[in-house]
Length: 232
Image 1 (cartoon, rainbow, N blue to C red):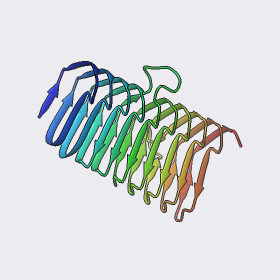
Image 2: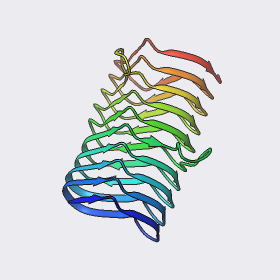
Image 3: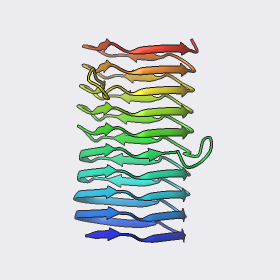
């Protein structure tokens, strides 16, 4: 289950689509001008999506659903009609060192940069997210997740938005663990309905609303963050 070094241009449907793929490696593909999602995978296990370039999609760059053991690393995604990367109902997820929105102009990601839903224990690490219409990174009921070392700039919503995700770590005190968020139109970091969340070591600059805002949360720790120039 290896798909490698394909050049797909001007597809009317998904660039690459897979169902119930196990032990798959999808690497070094270039997908440009795609009618639906750049890649769509549903079901299966132990899938790695590495080193691909995806641009010009009508829908999402990567649309990933119900996968047990998912690694998404080293991909470049820009000019999408919806989210850059969306993951739903999966476990063992690592989203690491991807570049989202860098290859296009303002608002070239017409949704969220990275959107994680119902995927507990997800790790979102060391990504660059820019030029999104909505949030840079969004985490919806996905408890026990980690968001570290990401650079988020020029996003139309919140830099990081976390909802219903108890026990999530946003940043950290060791070198490279903190997230850097600049020029978010909304809040730098917005946490709602999530208990025992740790927000530490992050830098938030020039947010349109609050630097860090928390609603309906217990057992919260906020420490050693730098917040500079907020809109309210």
